[in-house]
Image (cartoon, rainbow, N blue to C red; front, side, top):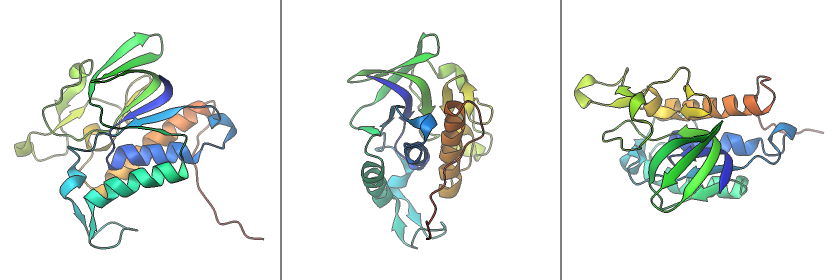
Length: 205
């Protein structure tokens, strides 16, 4: 199965990236683009999170509920995005020019863009990415967190990282913003490198 963009990780950053890409589905530059998300959620830090300080989330919102509701929001609003569940990514490899091969424990996928949206905990066991692993620049050194070497989320052409694994602090709003930022970078690429973002607006007569 081939994609234009394949997101690895179903936490805050990954799902926010998918939602922004999905929201551009009716734009001319986005038509025909195929997007998928491999929903790694078992090790998500949302599993035991409680939110009282996030704008737009009711105080007391549980992270485990966001994981469920996020998938439903994505499915309802943007059903064209493929949700791939119960698969573990084993490798992300250069396949041929401008294409990556993503190997899971069940399937192989090919994509022009790959977004790594996993958390910053060890061990990190995805073959093909080991050379980019380095100590996290913003986390408490005692916690021994990691990030993937990047510049403004870009590891190299077509390969992105977002959220805590991109070197950001572990805050919901920061992770979501990081995922959205990567999505708008990809949309900009699709739009002939014209700076691009997507807003929904209330239409008044």
